[in-house]
Amino acid sequence: MRKRAASSVNECMIKVDHAGENGAVNIYRAQKLMAYWRAPQLVANLKETQSHEERHRRIFKTYLDKRNIHPCMSYHLCGFGGFVLGFVTGIIGPKAIAATTYAVESVVLEHLQTQVDYLKRHDQDALAAVTDIIAEEQEHHDHAEHALQQPNLFSKILIRIVRFCTECVIHFGMRTTVRS
Image: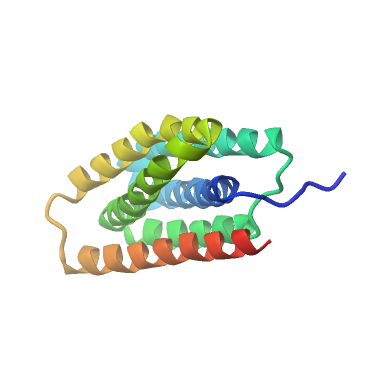
């Protein structure tokens, strides 16, 4: 049985969130692999963060499955891109890991807050899915911000690049999802 395409903006939002969480799972998976070598002191935190992102992905998957909606076209692309980003920043080391998490979570938190404002008026189930993950995303952001303390020039540049790429992925996901 073929799943139907998303029919509303709120369903599109959750499809993009689901794809984004797949990207996040793979960022932390790759960073964790590299941290065994480059930053063993970060492995436990990266495992915990990855488990949070896996839970978030399941929350969105459950929402989509209940409505018989197929995943976003960018789902696998987000997973692959996340793994590459995590791998590269994991090789670079702890500052790059923190900068990446800080940048991604900054964009994600802004994106989620926009969704909350919209979903309050349109879809209580989608709102519940989104609000269920915000505290953990904030925790990831704050932990990374603390780890950065005083970002160097490289960290500042990496943050700008990762923020821009994350914003582009969300924008691309929303555009392609609304069209499908």
